Picture 1 (cartoon, chains in turn yellow, brown):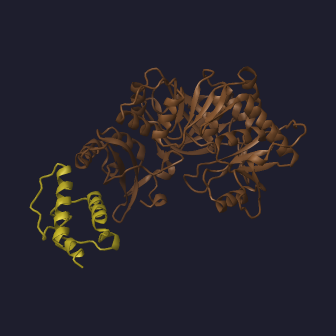
Picture 2 (tube, helix red, strand yellow; picture 1 turned 90 degrees about the vertical axis):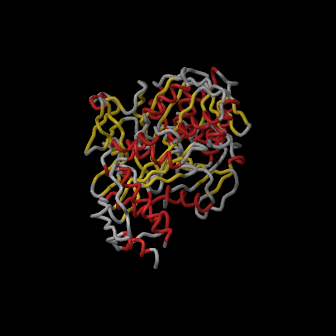
Picture 3 (tube, each protein chain N blue to C red; picture 1 turned 180 degrees about the horizontal axis):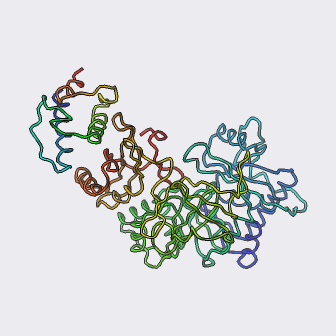
Length: 77
Length: 451
């Protein structure tokens, strides 16, 4: 679970940095689309990275987590 | 006919080797004699069509020449098939006879052993047609049997320039159209075909040094690997006279690299396909085709047009038709997508390789060009990967140089691709030991290789 959260935060940071954005404080309450402003392509990249790292990702299973916390929780199941 | 160009070469250079393979060397005179013996046997047995599953390229060459002498239609099967696979090809292609190195268990078809053949007496027939069947690579499904005619194939090769007596390396197998092209070019120019132990870059280089190869025709994928092997091993210089690239789009960056490595070689890239033959050879050192190919007019053997971004070809040098029907001498869709860029017709991908990223159509080749130029990248393949959010994303498999830092390469790839529209930027970069290839061509299809 801690591993998942660490990986998710790191991946999101990389995505925001690459587009030249200011990386905000990322907490489990951060809303992925609004607070972090990830667009659909960045979200697609995140889902692919999660699939590669953990062999499954919520998006492929029809779940769209709202916050970083919800996304992390997917891997706690 | 293949037998005739062998005889022509044998009359001036009987002792010269036509093929060196597996430590054996076959002279032009020996090739003609063996092919004629085989032809008499094929004729005596009344064999009109047959499959070749023999593995020794010397047997394959002489069997093909024998078939052209009798007018029987030979078809070389892919290498290293097991008996059921050979039987499957025989059934699909309607072959009652398959000639191989040993007796095969084929069910319906007769299995003949090549070393048992060639003992029949009799006259050789004078065939009025000399068909040959060549299989497609099957990059997008089961290989199809394409019927060609030796006379047409040789006519197309004859006006190609080439010095006599060169040594041509066979980097393809003889079942591939490109392999048959190398064979015909070499024989028309009374040259020697050198067959490496395997088609791994290492073995190819070894054969090139040992036999002082002067001509090499291979896919861009293969050339990249060869260049990588040469650069990694401080290999001594090769006195190549002719470098030919084909079978895939040739990137301009690769042409430049080859020019640096082989300053004395003539470099050409050919546009060819099993169905339409070899239709254009580009020697001006630039990638893509000159726009003038679109304005050749009805007198030309081959015409080109672009329909919905796809290159189409109509040619008099192409196939007679497919096995089991299918017209020739009509416009053929090539599956290659082109765009006009800087006065050239640039190849951007194949119809089956279009990546649909959230509705945006993305072509893989321009992305591969950018990624290939990143320091530390040896070769790469760009393809679509299924994704729940955007349907597909652009994925890239990278073979990195030994000792390169993967994180640095990833970052460099992302900055190199920042100039692309967002859907075209790689979203998944994976490091692999080698790319998926078939017939020396990169496979860019996630489903097929189960990436």
